[in-house]
Image 1 (cartoon, rainbow, N blue to C red):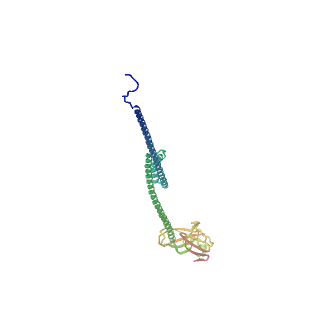
Image 2: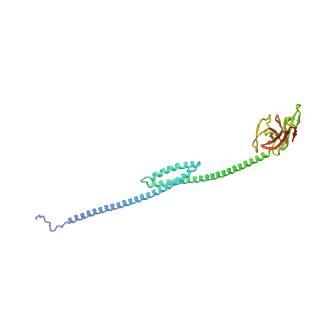
Image 3: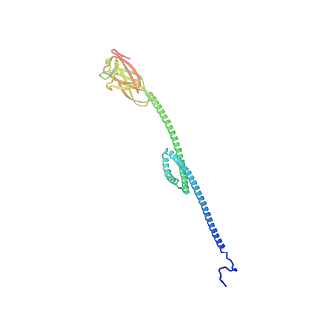
Length: 331
């Protein structure tokens, strides 16, 4: 039997090339599936990242809007605070202490709220804390407003009370002025009314003898003294000392000065200042008539008329005239 390289007619052929082709197709399919899976994952991841970015952008917009609203709320709270502290500055006393009490805590809250709102990347937690603190700040301001309103009301009541007291004081002062004026008028009336009245006025020229006896004389050159006598009385004048003044005017028009009295001036209510001759203090009893005698010495009485004026309480209450002549006594 001869060996040859040709296959035997009885040998079955092997399909190897077809098998390799299938393996290749399988590898390509797996590779394609892997690529598709990778692309799908990348597409899914991209979509997820986009959704996340969109969510983050929406969150940023939401936080920015909330931050803006919180800033407005904070600004409004500060405006309220400025208003109430401005009103508080116009008050005093208890309200000034109240201002210090509130503002210490309020200033601390303001500082923290500003810090939170000024953060570039403020988180939702930061904004939530700022929102809570703004609410607390508004509560503090509301309390301050209520206390200021109360104190304003109390101040208004005090102002009204002070105005009423001023009116009452003014009325009392006016009444006092009226009462004082009426009292002064009454006092003047009583004062004028208590002036004595003089009656039974007599002027007697007296010659004094060496023996001590006194005798009325008709000769002027013999007159040693003039005795002026009169009665005084007043029903409302109080009991006590009273001063009587006598003015004797000589025929030459000059006031006779009693050597024992000296020269003095009387301030009258109707006739101005007048020189008086003599003054006598008497002890008067209310409602009783009292006789008064003024002895007037001149040293040398000449002839003519001697005018007598009697004053009490600044008023002239009586007067009389007496003539002395060479030949005797007239009157």
